Length: 128
Image (tube, rainbow, N blue to C red):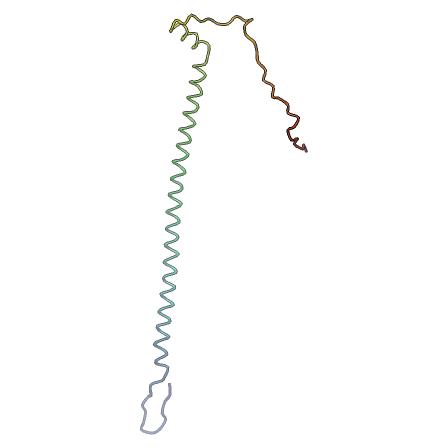
């Protein structure tokens, strides 16, 4: 700010920086707005990611429950298969439907051994 030191004239003259100060203030407002936008975007991303984490955790719990139900059903079916393929159940069904079947004589029972054929042209795997 310039002051005129002549006697009788104490007026202050406007400084040319007044135009710059408007642009400077405007630039400051723009910077503050950008900072505010960045802060709001970070908060929004934080809330969004927490929501996605909660949804994923819920889906995981649902999947684990479905896996648990499938495991229980598999166990139940395995027990039912063992019960249905047992000899007491089969003999009861033979009597129930009057099929006239009987158990094989011990001499009629033979054990089968499955042997895999050895191929000479099969590639050999190096053992370590």
